[in-house]
Length: 493
Image 1 (cartoon, helix red, strand yellow):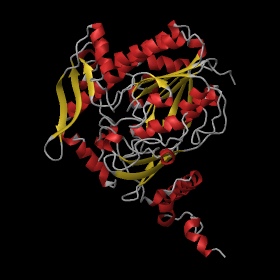
Image 2 (image 1 turned 180 degrees about the vertical axis):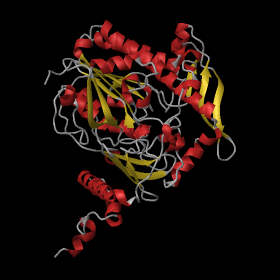
Image 3 (image 1 turned 90 degrees about the horizontal axis):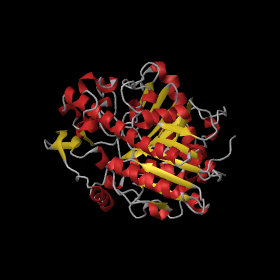
Image 4 (image 1 turned 45 degrees about the vertical axis):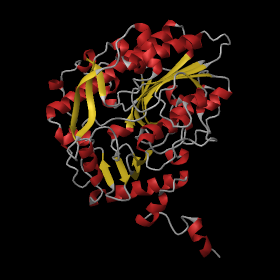
């Protein structure tokens, strides 16, 4: 194994589908910076978020544990009674690095609680609250004023019609600012400024510097240069737009109505995909500027670069937008790229990895114990080209958004099982049905597979202490009378 690098640059996007990246197989979207990062490092083909919702996923990255452990289960803007901050004694990688005398920086989206900000965990940088670009933030307004750039202004909003007949959520709009005035450019500039300060640290302290872009999360609000970059007429909608919701949990059809998908015609749907692609290319451009600064400052040979997203985005897949109570790959599969000095370039790894593995990797790169990241495992051996034994499946969970909605998912290389306690369970054969259109939960031809997945999901939940397994014990042929000592201890002699 190679020696630990001196510094870590961590790049994170929000609601970013792997279908938008050249290095993940899209031949049309221009992502030269991220494609170059993949070519110079390692690309993970089967990276998954532990939950497809911003705050819980980001809390899992910060802590290295699954949401049911850290208990920060919902975005505060749509919270329906869950906790809004991590416990004061919760382990975080940031505090571990700070205590080891690392310098920490975070520029961009925090979305990790309401009482404690990134600064409370040791990060330098402006506090930028909320789920989308805070274009009224004083630091951003000062940035525009200092450079003589025009203020934020939009036109041509794209909306559907909500079920109540009112206007639907804002999906996209034209931004009347040059690229240099965009919030994305501002984030890159502030990152580069901090990178320069950290590189000049008189004490020579190692640093961890993160840039968390708020995009390409919708609404896709872009200057014309990027809003019009891709021709909508040449875009094919995702194959799962053929979704009928037959045999699926009814909540999916309800969510489709919430996002007003059927009130938007096909031309508008293609326009939204084009705008999403444009947003990805804009962010890639800004990431390229940050990576160029790493090179310019002579840091590349001593700095690991990691890139990922908190979760994916539907953008019309399954007649849905955003994310929500549907555990499809479009929102659970995420990009994950790693370039560590001294490690092989151009690697493609197919192992199942997750955000909490990146937590363990950060600790490993810092020379710190990885055990506190209880649900993660350092990716360093994979990046170094080794072939250790690895997990053969990935477990994910969901707790609700707008309303409580518990789900658990087990994903293997060939199948996916989703348990929905209040509704229809789901089973997909990913070999014959990669777009997850046909729920095979009641198909007798997959009965053996279903039993195997249910048994394995139960085993993993029970092993990690996720009490969701209690529900499964009585509902499936798993477990036994001793599954819960708090219920069965009185029967013991």
